[in-house]
Length: 324
Image (cartoon, helix red, strand yellow):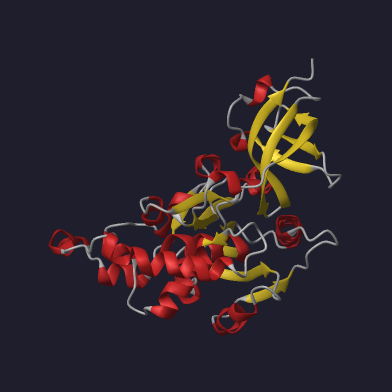
């Protein structure tokens, strides 16, 4: 008997992970075709802020996917994972004949949803870009679908990969640096520019541009090898990267604040900035000169700020002075 499948898509996660990995938008028809291979689709929904992702709606609907609008909260933070989780649980409780969930996201925040559905005897399949798939997710699901654009297989067939003559990175440095400098003017985050934006702008300037022509599987790896460009990840899952051109370190603005809350079991905490701004979230991966377990509430730290899916957060956190 053919499996009955429900597909739930985290549009933000899929959109940005594919842009960062391949410098192109998701191929929704490919996603639907791969999901159909796993059984008869009873429901397929894409959850997103359709103000931000308005350009994706026509193609999503064209492929029979139902767009579900998820507004940002009043403080500008996304609650998409909550909306998707509640909708998925509701569907599976109301439709006992659906036996498989295909979740298009590599975000570990969905682990509780997956655990509950597995306890109900449901099969769980994750669809995601391989490098952005949480190892914890990979370890608990029944199967995975690794996203790979059809265009990639066509252009870089493994049988002829040894015959490809890659261009030198130096030949593209000016184009890339000039592009990033132009985009920095529109950045509201200390000149940091999302790699997805950089990739699309490079394609607009040079339609034939591809980081794969230079021997890189990801644009972020290419940028990391170019002097004069700094790269960092905008969340600890490393699914969203940002970049900017390098300036002298003494021009880089840092802040100070006090550790006011630590959640040891989760590996994150909050900093109260000296300038009176609201408390800032930070993860253990944002620390530079101290282990998370050695931090204490009351410690004085210095930090940069970044914009993540949680809003403004602290980054490059360094211990300045112990609480006592």
